[in-house]
Length: 149
Image 1 (cartoon, rainbow, N blue to C red):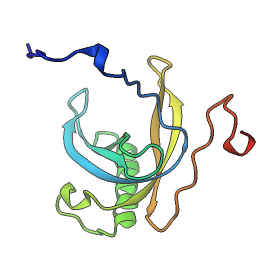
Image 2: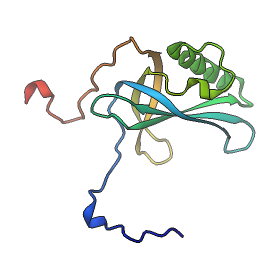
Image 3: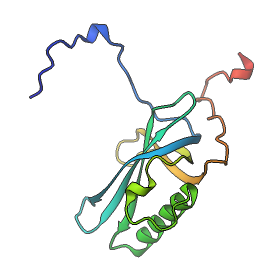
């Protein structure tokens, strides 16, 4: 149980976190942790990325890299993703995931449907060096593009 004495919801605007629009974002890794897989047969590196500029500054996206998995293809994909992250931040042989924190890189985010619920979620599809300038995210479906307003 947590003491919420003094909190008044009528004094705070509610927030909702729809997925980020597909696009490229300048971000940094703010958290990293090895976690066991659901079945307990492996481990994944859970990375938290925070957008550091633009309209979505402060928003977070996550990546799970299956670095220890009974499926060799899952491990190969994860090692390739980790290699892309390392190259993007300029740390080629990290001994600890903390070495990747707070170093700017460009993440390409896509929006996809979850298999289990059908809800929309973000997925990071690629990583690039900071000098690969982020493009503006695509407008939401049905939204009027800024140049037509």
